Amino acid sequence: MLRIGIAGIGYIAETYIKLQAERKIKGCVICAICSRNREHMQEVQSGYKLDNAELYTDYGVMLDSGRIDAVLICTPHRMHIKMAREALDRGIHALVEKPVGVCIDEGEELLHTVHLHPELTAGVLYCRRTSKAYGELRRMISGGELGAIKRVNWLITNLYRTQAYHSSQAWKGTWKGEGGGLLLTQVSHQMDLLVWLMGMPGQVQGFCGYGIEREIEVENEVLLQMWYPGNTTVQFIASSREFPGTNRIEISGSKGQVILENDRDMRYRKLTLDEREYSRTTDEVYGSIPYVEETKRFDDADNSVQQAAIVNNFIQAVQGRENVLCPVEEALKSLELINGAYLSSWREQAVRFPLNSREYKEEWEKRCNEKEGNDKQCHNR
Image (cartoon, rainbow, N blue to C red; front, side):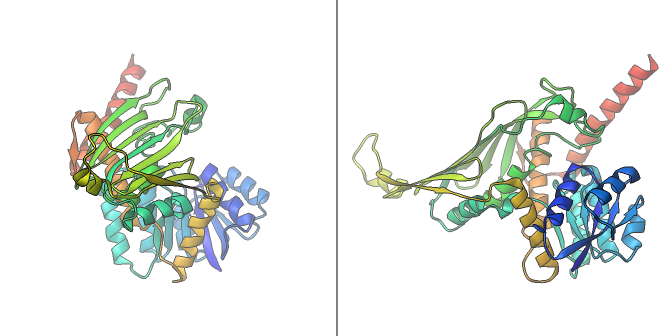
């Protein structure tokens, strides 16, 4: 049994503890919990009958205790990379809640640490990679079933968050505390899936709305335009202030079109002839290519199913039975895309990849410092 420690004891950590208590996460035992809030740790320990779990208020002490083989890091975003590096440097496997971090330059430091410890397993909790539906989309794209990809459209607005959500913890909704907003937190999964499905774009143009109808510093409205080699374009629209919302990804290729809604309902319109061939050979001015429509419904769209699956994958990877579904190196690609989208929005111009991580860090720190400066001015009046 893999001995696991939990770092952080907020909502997401309790989710994984509950899944382990229900035996949906298997092959591990929770031997330690770390948080600055001892009272809450005791409540969780009692509620889930974790009698054998030692409680720590010091992360380093937990890592040095000899009680754990791996750590599940569920702390605020800005702490992820530092805590993962500390674990790996002590010979402890690390599974990090998404996003892997806030700024890509720190992510590069984590990747260096990962390479120093090839005997250890490190992964990121991008659980949507376990989805059968997105796995099918990836197979269709990489296998050429859709032909040359022309366009991807993703509209995701079913991520509604109230002011109470943003106000629930002081670090949320701030540049310094959370590191970003909608892109870094709510649609971080979809950013990861885009890179998993399509690879990195050549450039991105980002348009962000900051603090719209909410008392937050960060963005809660996003429009991204991405360009890929080979005349492929991607449009991504997201919001966390709409209700009811939509989750629909549409992929158009030269051999057909596939539409996935709500992570489970798929329609595939398979052309009888590749559009490029049809366009070259037809005498029709407008034309219409016959197609066959197929539908599928996937049964694993529930978030808890995918959360359990990604942790189970990590446990199997530690034991050498599977590959990590989202290694650190791949998680850093979506972080680079997110950083690029922010930088584009701030500069009001398209940004090319690879991103200059130093330039991004400087611009991001300006946002953090501007808020601190404004707070000091208000306090001194």
